[in-house]
Image (cartoon, rainbow, N blue to C red; front, side, top):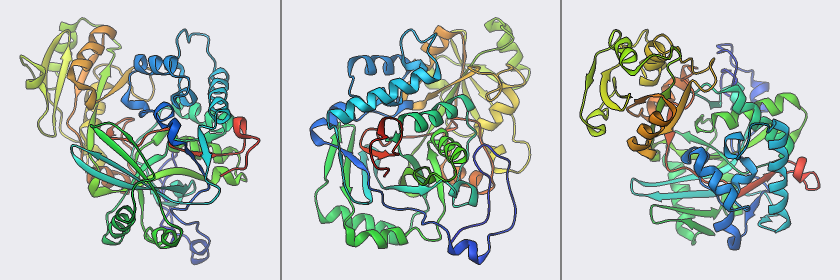
Length: 440
């Protein structure tokens, strides 16, 4: 069943009528198997790469320069390349295509030869999460079956669109959540209990396991998602790229679906994405602090531990080598997005006080996953003359509430960890570096 129309990525909210019965009858399945490629076990350690957001630009530079077989060589951005001043978008895409060609020539990926679903389990200190690796319809972003909650930066989305078009493959599934059901949990338990994992990798901190869903379980697992809604949790820029690529080539069937991994919402863990902003007024630390203190209550503390926000509505502040804690201004309006700390910070502090428009001023705000720690936040702020804001994480249900209202948070509002890795699955699009291969 197709649900009521919502807003497409990058567009205005739509609250129009529900589709007709005829429209619903022609809806694509929400999740579907795909005839992809899977990394060869002998190559897994060299090819599989950590999530892009988990690494700083310096760490990504070191990774791609030291390991030519890491999948990050395929997906790297301008920040990941040394001496990148004259590097064009076309150059980046060409380098990514060359890196994928290198992997294909070494037979690092093996074609499966048949459509299949996969289960992806991550085991970590907070628990276990098991998701279904599949493809989802790009039209789902428009018809309400797939819902987003964050704005995107056009430059990043354009790079990923060009990557899809020029490299011709994708290996980083968009992470999504679905409301947990007993039926889905039973499928996940039965499949993972019936046989050992086909592939295992990772570390003692995070263990990654992959199962291929048996053919006789595929149809019933697909049906478990009937009448469900998916919520993007990680990969809004990849989602935007999929929408833009299909809009440019609406008759290209390979672009009509995109790679995803769908987890039950009750298993997910949200971390905060801290903000590192540049004061566009170029004030001294003392003057900037005074400007902030005119808007919100700011108090000095002795350490990052004291600055750490313990609940919503409070943020840690790092400025001029010192830690502070501040109360965020109250929410304006009843919309779910307006009550979130990231939106309260954006509306009351980042733009009006610092002039740091997250969407309109490139580089005005950078983002740091909470997992990288307060020491890294302080180091970055000191090195780049930024003002750091440490936020309290939101919940998965708060995220869903925003998406259900067609609301959009600022970019990088939530950070889900641990993340599925790139370089495990390869979905071939039959173009660019994969022009000689059949699309999967």
